[in-house]
Image (cartoon, rainbow, N blue to C red):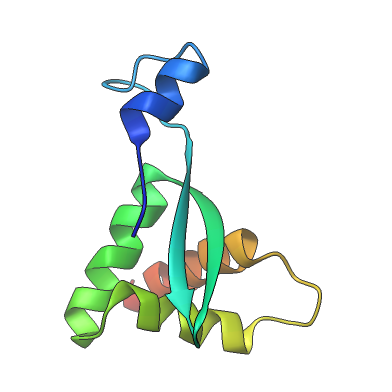
Length: 90
């Protein structure tokens, strides 16, 4: 998984320590590299969900990718997945 929050934030002129911003990350799913952009809280929630399921983050991204509607943006699908998981838990 590739991520460089401080460098990405610095390029945008943002202080990485106290700001929520979008970070682009890359994963390999089903044998090909793909990327998605998420705010850190969404990424942390996805990591927690993957850990609870005892699967890798890449496997979770692949699962969401396989279920998303044709033409839907992967980053948006991941955010909706996190939201639906939170709603299911409450």
